[in-house]
Image (cartoon, rainbow, N blue to C red; front, side, top):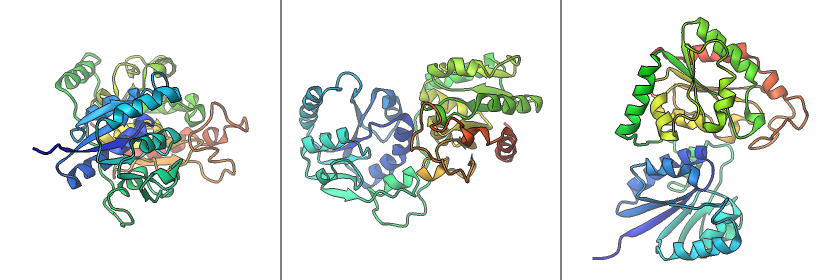
Length: 342
């Protein structure tokens, strides 16, 4: 019996990027029948790929610790080579990812033409800055095609244990008809002002909605500042749920309001209405919510915006006009158009 052919997909970026890789993997599995698909990811995203029915195996690259040095990376690459991949796709454009592809020396390798060390890729694929990330990734399968049907939902499996955990939380808190709010982000200039989030929450509490604040453990203190006196109406779930458990939680939500960060893409997994607020970044970077139920809001016309593709720890001009001049009433008006009563 011949050995099964194997594909390696390299995606060692952030959780949001990992989620937006899933539609590509789903379509690749359909077009490469008979191939085993393995994903190289970081510790923070292994849960996401583990939850995909289209991923046969995932390998963790701990680039901040175990494989941080060049020597440990070389050893890691040697171990990878023993897995005998037939095809490698690198969706991450970093130098480290390119070095891994170079070290694997696979006959059929694909990477974006804007990648570091792009010469290592035997099949360079055009990177389209104006396209959504999902659409960009699908270029690896159908390069140059119009592809009007790129809006593919990322699929994740939720375990029965996770379903039970979420349902018990909602029951214990007596939560129904709720709006999810995700006020956090890794970058400060992506965060919509907290005082504006408070105004939005106050408005919807007055409309008899319950609010569930979501995020990682690092967002728990931030979210606690949004509870103020409405502990029965505003629930702090930050740090309580994993990424996949959060997807299950969001399925019961009528709307998610969040920054340009990973929760946007969790909302796509849950296929719910999402309103993404853009402060220092812009939707044109290609990471906006893309199902038909969702929308985004961004203050246009600022010469300083966008100030960077990711953001900064503080506003370079010390004004933060992109957030401060995007008043909460505008967000509320757009949210009301999207909200689905549950």
